[in-house]
Image (cartoon, rainbow over all chains, first blue to last red; front, side):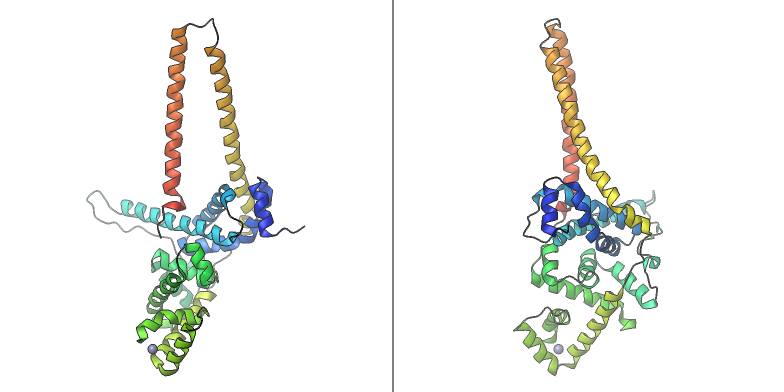
Length: 184
Length: 144
Ligand SMILES: [Zn+2]
């Protein structure tokens, strides 16, 4: 028996946890790979994507059936990733200063090219360029080009107007274009 | 309208997200503007590369145990709720029995009550801290 997504969600809302597995299986890969693109670490991506599924489940009663689960779930996931990045940056700021206040460079293993399936020069450069973008710029590139979502979906996930989707995408891509100039 | 103002629309154009009248305006502008045609080519090329990017698959066990890990944490949460409800019920019952026991002196009752009230307040403050922490920690804090 195959249930529609809405039927699955209303089962979950009635407390039937086992049905949630179908939703998790449907979105786990895109959740994991999206988080990986956002935070650049396989371990963190696994934790964050699972945490997002847990948080979504805990507030599933508040989910309104006229929305898309995927958009709602990605909103939770993307916000988790952004706050994770902020915390990581704050930690790095604290740990990079020695007692005299001088900055010590710390080895940063995030956004390692080994995470890439194909390590052609152009992909390495893209991965590096993406890591250097602002979080919100990387986020929108990943949602659009990596996840293949429409502007409408992105505007629902990020809760921004369609016009802002287009202008933010434009900012992100023009920065990427500069960073990728050698390959264009 | 100069090229700069078209640039934002060009992204909508290569994504196939433009509708008339914007689409028509962009097409007309492109027909007469080699600079923007070059931009369109660049952005298309860039998009090809970003769309092609793939990450390595994690080991298969990760996918196999993915749901189990989530399931355990969801049900563990429910377990805690039941546990706490049970503890509170038992404690409430014990206090009631104790308070209504005529063999115990009023002073003793008062002392024991003070201890329980203190514990209760501590528990509430801990829970309150947790709630506050989870609120700031959660996706809600992110202003867009
Ligand atoms: Zn032009």
